Image (cartoon, rainbow, N blue to C red; front, side, top):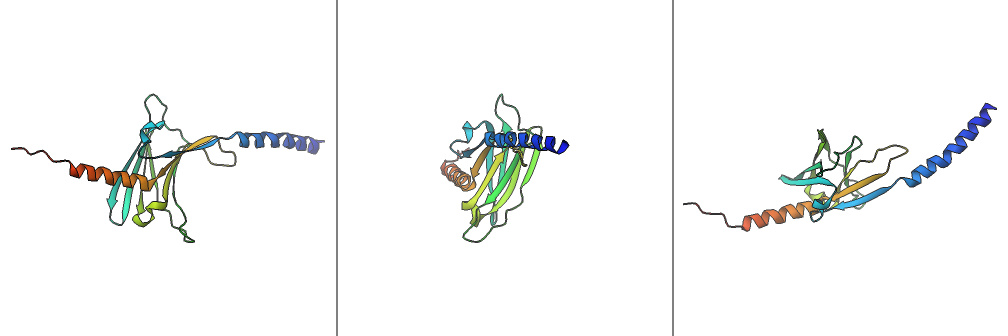
Length: 161
């Protein structure tokens, strides 16, 4: 009798689990230098030269009037496969201080065209909660930083007598 009740309980749970997984919503939002200001978080991306690398600092703060990132917030760094070669992913550092999150990492210059950073608040596990993914194409931010630097170098410096 107990076995039959257990089977019925498990059989009743399976549709609930499947339905929950089907309702889990995962939405990808590309973040570019052009649309970074219109995101629901106050994202900022800093790019610096570091020899054979580009050093990145990505900050995430709550936008005005929004709640800070939750405890399930995380970042993920990926470098797409190049031909058949799998590229080792550099270390990623995350600091969460009073709701402001800072990610830092370095990417070898030769891999910038294949490097992406993703920020999400979706939890991991067999039953992920609905989540949004903000994906940063890192080469776009390098190009924007270079263009900004070139523009600033063309601005005449004031002369003081």
